[in-house]
Image (cartoon, rainbow, N blue to C red):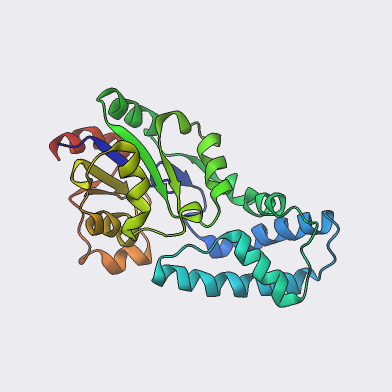
Length: 245
């Protein structure tokens, strides 16, 4: 019997207007970051900074996709400063990173049917949590509050704060500890086969793959090797699907 449901956040509970094309969006994010650093009094060459930040980001992103330990955006920024010989003392890096994420945060919106679905599951007595892979905890917390999701979910676990990423099974430990439930009584719901669904398998949970925004090269690569217990094409299907699981 299922007693709890863990949700991914991006492309599961909230939808993005840039179709996960982060490489296209990132230049505007770096430009926003650079503008804020200039406003805080840091002298830097915008082009050199953008090139260095992109290089450091890509290097660390490749690492975290293979060893499943999170590398935070704060660490990426500090490493970029170090590579350019810049001193971040006196800078408000939290403010600068908020500026960095602002262009992307403006493009997220609630997934169709999200509030009706989670309210139905809550009324049925299911415990609800969020476990999100993200390099910046504050970014995720703002998204959750911007879309009025916090009242439904406890706990909320972000890899930037946990230190590990899905599919590492340790990222789910805070949920099981808070709920006093074994993995067999919990289902993982998310859009990414190699993180959400494999993570569920690794720890002994059931899994539902939601496919509203799952048409990605990574999912295509895993589609015949990482198999969920169920597939949903919309959040509205979840109450009936979970009842059957």
